Length: 344
Ligand code: PHE
Image 1 (tube, rainbow, N blue to C red):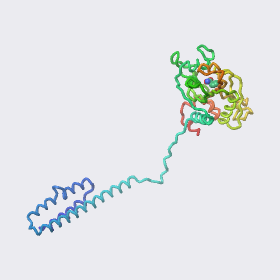
Image 2 (image 1 turned 135 degrees about the vertical axis):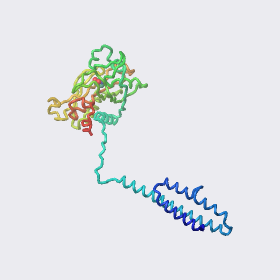
Image 3 (image 1 turned 45 degrees about the vertical axis):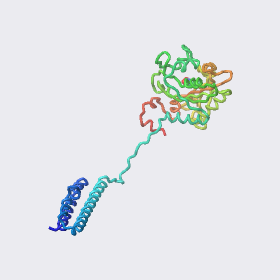
Image 4 (image 1 turned 135 degrees about the horizontal axis):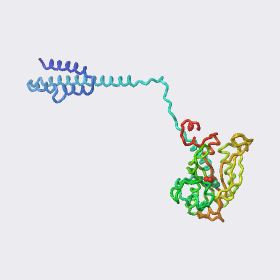
């Protein structure tokens, strides 16, 4: 058999073999078999040494051509294998664009967070800063520096979870105001709101919770007055309950303020005519406030002959309940998604 015939035979054998290969891995084996170091061509090359010189170039040319042909078969087959793979993948991963889409739930902020943030925005707009403090407090900041010495009868107004004799779960966010006054090195003006969780020993029912959220405010300056307090609270009341609201102040008592007031807002439900929400009075009590007691200013190092302050505090749950007609405070904490979802 001539070299040419040998090569012809090799080519057709390779063609046949290569066409049967189904995987790239297998294809590499076949490639090695023909073109590799111990492959068929290596065998053929050995024949060269027996050839007369003049025939060698022709021999070289023919073998190279044959190698190229086989290499092309390999390339083509590889392409076929890869195309088949892609086609198979396309077939098996077809997306039926006519199927209805999966709806996915977008979370919402908890109603209390929404109201808290709404109030924060309002007060930031009026130049206040938002201050936070620890939920575990010391007696001194929660009570003593707020004009509530040990055994003061008004401590009963805020039944307390004590951790030790001197530490407790804060019963209001007023200790944040104490901390801010103490921290103010220059003893200069202060304008802050203090939102946060507070705790009181209460038996939970529809209107009581041992944990709730407060939103308090404090303004310390040389000229603050009851009129500033009233104006500020009117803005807040209208923001929360609508532009038509009026407020009225009734005398009250808090140890940390003097005078102290209870603040009512005209009923948003009946516009003050009287309904079941305002119990027929046309007014709803929403917060406590007052002019900060001189003892409180002095206890945190402020000169009460120079500075005056006003403060206010409200329960965020109560605001939410009034605004949305929620009749059980426990709904805020049980995290029933159907409840939470209603408030956008
Ligand atoms: N700290 C008071 C409370 O929790 C609320 C309040 C704040 C009242 C400021 C008057 C002035 O009951």
